Image (cartoon, rainbow, N blue to C red):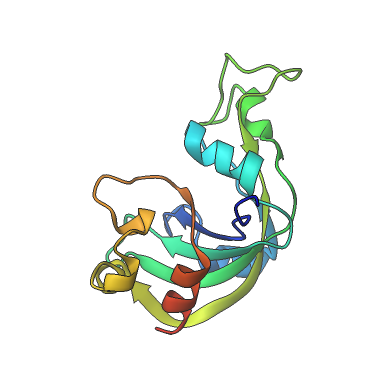
Length: 155
């Protein structure tokens, strides 16, 4: 029997750069600029259209989960890697063998309140969650079904 496919994710963004309100306004947005191989692999190998996403605000006064989104596309090449004017340009990547991928993310809803990182860290049921482990700085990470349910119950 093969392991169950992960269908829940957490994606981090700094609200000064791209917030849940920005996603709400735009409806669907490419999740570009990911330049970490493990995060890229999650998008490439794990994410599928229709998967659920926690939208997380990072590097702000109150980091935490602020909304829900949905994966709106399978992974495809991130065009910013080919643009020399982009902050995410990668001279080592080529169009015939792109190094970096992205997925489109669709707004679902804002949470009634921010579920803060401090709250998440205090929950024993989330002790093994990648987000709460020290030193984990990934911008894209899997969330187990049990973690998803525990977090949504906090809203």
